[in-house]
View 1 (cartoon, one colour):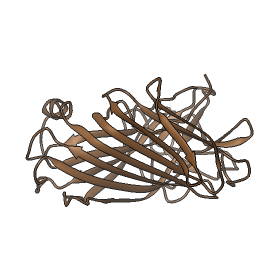
View 2 (cartoon, rainbow, N blue to C red):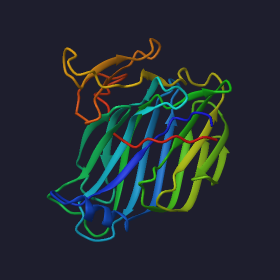
View 3 (cartoon, rainbow, N blue to C red):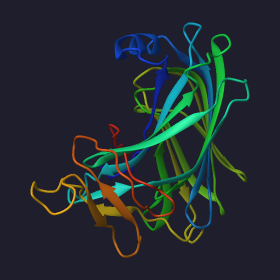
Amino acid sequence: MRPVGAWLVLLTLLVGAGVALGPVAAQAATDSITDLSVDYDIAADGSVAVRYEIDWHFSSEGRHGIDFAIATRESWDADRTKDVVYDVSGVSVSSPSGAPDTFTQKEVEAGSVGQLELRIGDRDQTVDGQKATYVISYELRGALRTFDGQPEFFWDVTSEDYPDIENFTARVTAPGEIRKSRCLVGTSECDTEISDGGAMFTGSGVRRGEVVSVVAGLAPGTVSDAERCWSPRCRPLPSGTRGSPSVARLPLSPVSRCWVPCSDVSGSELTGGGAASHPASPPAQLRRRGG
């Protein structure tokens, strides 16, 4: 199995203040996404402009919004001494359907696992009816890698935590031509097509627990940076170490010029600097896929 950086997006429900996790999980199990449209626009410097448009169907009225989490750190199975870090910046949220679209963001990290958590909605205002459309955009760095001499974007569009998806479309565009593409729902192939405008991936009937993944192979030389951003494996500091017992700043490789803060497994919230404007780092159950 070749190593593949995972892109985890975790979606859960925001039911309201003080609601226990049990009812949230029960309601989330019967929600669905009628249409998911995702765009990945790869720039010449290797950064990726990401845009999610989600048509969400709530199973009941009186709901407040959703949670959306983006992976920022994961362990690297090919080398147990390293973690991979992704830089996320410029987050924006809107709702074409008029649902409450205010949001807060928090970075949480536990060991080698991190995510940026977005809480979208208003605890004092409910969604009108059972349908809402959310548009979430951000810039991503560190997503590309070089495989067999060519830049490649191999990414999980969804995670196992998504509800059922009736229809999805993902598009990948790049500065030069896209030479190969592949679409997977779990281990099954889905439709993909390459045109002058990039690669398109489509499918339907995605069940909870199935992950949608896309692969786009770019022409050599079309992007200036197609390498992972590495960090030494994140470990908690031994007790008695000078400074905070749960925080260590670990430099990445000199090439990446990134600095990523680490925390202990308690998930202490941290602040610090990142590759671009990335504050800290966050927990998600990150996954890898091979092909």
